[in-house]
Image (cartoon, rainbow, N blue to C red; front, side):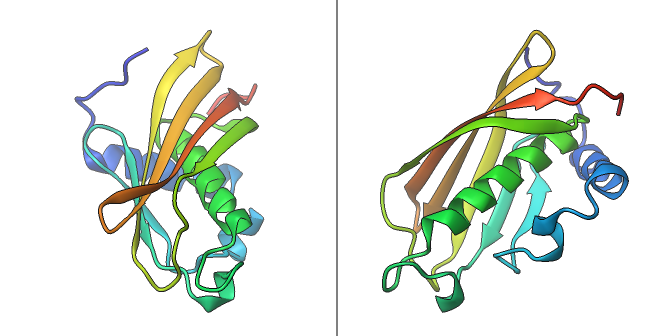
Length: 150
């Protein structure tokens, strides 16, 4: 199901803000983000974009961001992408491919988009995290639409 390219960038951001306030304001990730400088915004085509830098407090192995931090950022971006499109969803599964280590103190660029929607309730999303123009992490996730209207 293609997403409408005619929506304006502020429509996605405003929808995300509205649904976060109504349904997601007490989320642990919102209150205690493992990446405090992560900010999301939508491109005109409905792709959720993010930028962040992880510091030594996010480190696993020396100089490398802990994989659990990366997975939390990916899950959060996918949920927020769905919210920006007007849907409250729950994670059903998440598959992450770490292609290269995500280095600390190096800017990261994140892109998350809805790939498809099956039966109006199962959303397939993909995320890429890049550093220095190279893809370091790719992820696919499926999310189930909440039963109450949004």
